[in-house]
Image (cartoon, rainbow, N blue to C red; front, side):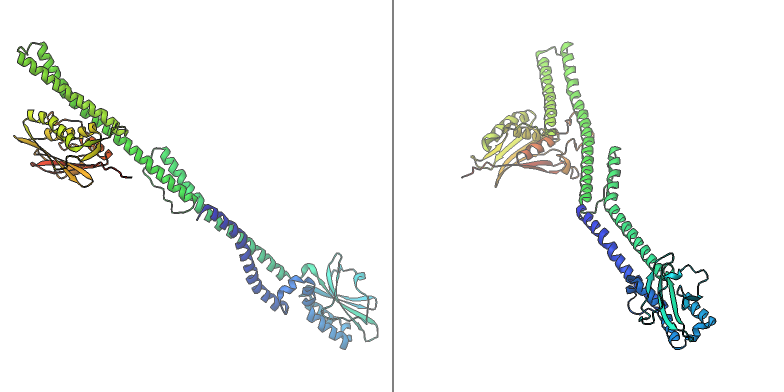
Length: 495
């Protein structure tokens, strides 16, 4: 859930959920309590009406007592002169937080409350013509706020009399007040519960991912990249966690590449230093031989000079490879692509390498199966480097008395395929997938005969791929190796 949506939902829940729960609680709890109130106080109809109309509550509270007393006053008023009877009536009224006052003419003859605080002058006058009922009464303010119900009658001796039922408001309906208190507590608990649930929900959705990001940042700060950030959410925080995880993964890859690059550089330095040491040692030895007069004949002198020249060429090739490797590593190989006639170009290459191979007693065979006018787009210098590196690698591992190298050119649709075959020692099947990796060598033990920087075939692969082609190899141990690479043909676009 998006963070914006989460906040909107939280706002709506904060507003509506407490209201709905409070209404439901008030209704349900009220139904239960009001049922009890109706049963206890003998209220008919909806109990909620009595909460709305407090006068109706007070009036109904003593309704039956009023009707009973009114009947006695009308039919047997002499009972109202009996103190025992009046005490009985008053006792029943006390259960309803009320008491009885009886007046004969202007004199109060019975007060049902031990400590009377109700002013006598607040009592209404005798009015025999007034319509009096259980639902009538009037409210009197003062030190004691009360509802007064009046019953006017005539004593047996002819004196006017009035009976008053006084209901004190501060003591009325304690159970109803308890219900209201319970309802208020319920509403407060609902608000606390809703706020707590929303806090947990927001905390889990926002704070927990932030804690994860904080822990991840601390790990990265400490240099630890071996961890993962799990983010299942689809909101903005989840997207941030996924971006952070991708950043961590990239940093880890970069760190691993840096370590691998440093390792490769150490291997390269080790290889180059080893391979430079051999020709330098040879050059130093032959130079000392010339200086010491060991080359005392013109033939020996020329041989020493040629050897020094060849060793210097080997050093030059190693340095060139190192220079090209640095350009490969930064993708800065200079290319000069041109249209090249396949037949003419490979005729020149074969003629050039043929002289060197002939001097080493290696037989060279060249067959071009493509048409004479086929063209390719390539950098002639870099393509020549590819051919020389492959052939040089083949020569390095030729172990037969009569070695041979076969070069074949084939037309394969949109590409020209070049095959360079030798009858050397071959490559083991377990090593074949890795021969184009930098610094990979199939011979674990180095010697001067099979030296090299270990980056020759990786350079070849890079150049071929930059030409839009592919390179691969087939080999069998003790039989030989065939290197294949393809270069796309030049095709004119007709508009």
